[in-house]
Image (cartoon, rainbow, N blue to C red):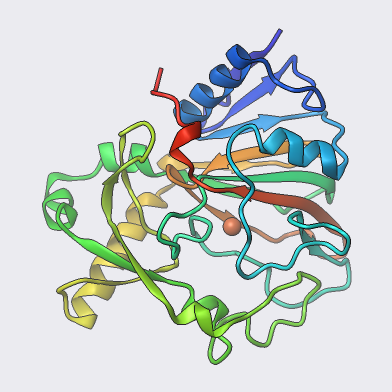
Length: 283
Ligand SMILES: [Fe+2]
């Protein structure tokens, strides 16, 4: 019997009473999808997933997407590794707030991370609830962002020249590309593509705003990012081995953290396309 227990934090719910190696019946899948739309982050502890089982579970929520700048594991088509060796000393990968691949025209709806080697301390993943932040936003800020269209690009992270990861030497399999200079637009205050709930779509790939000067754009982007990242909208997720986490990139930003120097860390990752054929109406 599936049990869904909210974390009590600004987002997240823990799902138990389920074996993810088994296919979901239609009612269970709908229930999980609705819980995902409501809580934005689903946490499944104590699962035992080999790569084919991981893919089979994920595919029930949408077609598995290609990751543009992270290479898959050797021998895998799609599963990528989020990894760091005990002796690595460079910057932590993805330690800035972002929605995965928000520089795509249709960003991936979901990211799934499965914990394999988890250090005894540190390495929390932080999530902030964009919808809660939008609902609590001061009227004055709302009036300023209401009609703004943001420009998202991967260039500061993955451009071959000048991207943060252009000279990356760590154990993540990062692939920089000239494609990273491309730009797409998303409304900053926008409706969730599936539930319709209003949220603030920001993060580190939001680089500019249409119709504003460089300074004015930088100022409002900094203000929106500071607002959504306020502690009252943040859930700090603690990992355990054999734990799967499924988050909604359309409703939360996330950020990696360090604090596990001297320990290996390995998680497997998949993303899914936001395919409307998989959508359910919100509960
Ligand atoms: Fe990410």
